[in-house]
Image (cartoon, rainbow, N blue to C red; front, side):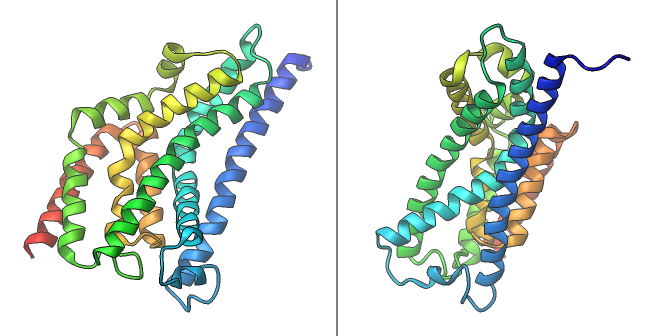
Length: 258
């Protein structure tokens, strides 16, 4: 084999930059999540000390929104990495695509924008639930009934046509890109938003389970992250979604009835 061409070298460089960027952003999110979660279930004198605030003023609302946003980025970005890597590869082959790395950054930005909007909604829901005393100061469901309803609802959603449609799109990055390809950074941003909407449609109910198990419960965060990866990337992901639905419904009924 001969030496790689200039184009091959640039393509390899772009793939490495994209992969390193995804890994770096994910790692930074978890480097913020883990110490805060550990401190919250410990002395609460370190990274999570600000959660002891008694009132939902503007500063506290923005911090809660940031907390949700960082969690969603850390939990969801890894499952979008095949889409981002594939987009980068195809962008390199376009006649006027420009920088593949810039396009991936724009696409990732659109994807994360959707989850930032979800985080705003989760922040509002948390504020309302806290005011109604449905959440404890530890950001957990205040009673088994509330947690059971969330589990039951999330389990039912696993069997809905919307869930199936969104999961199919998330599991088929090539099909998504071929159908929704748009050139340029703005086009990549719009593609990221579109993919983020499918991802949101697939996972929003699972993410709300954080209220059932504890918004900053590290075990729950890790388990949900792992399940989302399996559901979207593993060959048996579709079947795991249905099995999880059965398990969630059963657990939800047990918590409500028990």
